Length: 255
Image 1 (cartoon, rainbow, N blue to C red):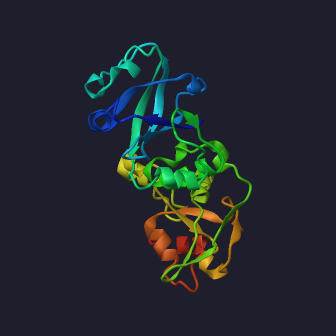
Image 2 (image 1 turned 90 degrees about the vertical axis):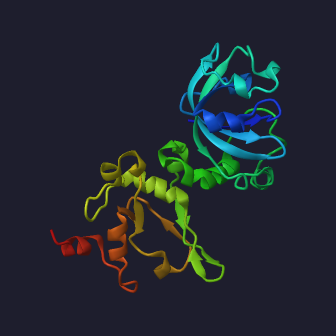
Image 3 (image 1 turned 60 degrees about the vertical axis):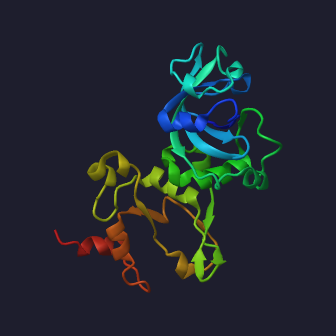
């Protein structure tokens, strides 16, 4: 699976109104995206005055000779959108805050030049974007190579108005991939109770709390992390100075 960013000239196509009304649109699939596949993630970058990535989409279909979704009400200048000859169908996943992925933020994290045409995302820029959009869509959509890093680090102490410990968002993705999203203590699964909105929702427990280490450490998501429901996670840490083990908490459950 690949990640792409594509520009939208809002003076030619009113994408904001389109996505306010439609959940899917047909988009020009240029030669730069000939390797695009169904399931790829597409980020839509809006031209000035927005100058930011605003929409996260998933490719539902590719190489469509004609559009099948009527979005003609939102075409302002039709030359670039009518009878293009090759389209891809995009499903809207999320509308993100305009301040999150601005042009300046993207430049600071590896964007080269202006976004004037489709391009694939990789390396530092992709990592930055994934960290920002992670809360907005299912972690199962993340690129597999992002989940297969051998070594994960977290726990660097950050000083703000107090002390907090830096978390690595990729660890959560890997832990869920390995252990699933069912609580290791009580067996609770959010998806089974709350249907789709609970999919992959779970808290990730550090078997050795980071605040007891107080330094940046390497973490193995297979042996150092475990999925817990919110209640069990709080109970394990009820005594902050001496948290319970998973087995100890299991023994305390009254059935």
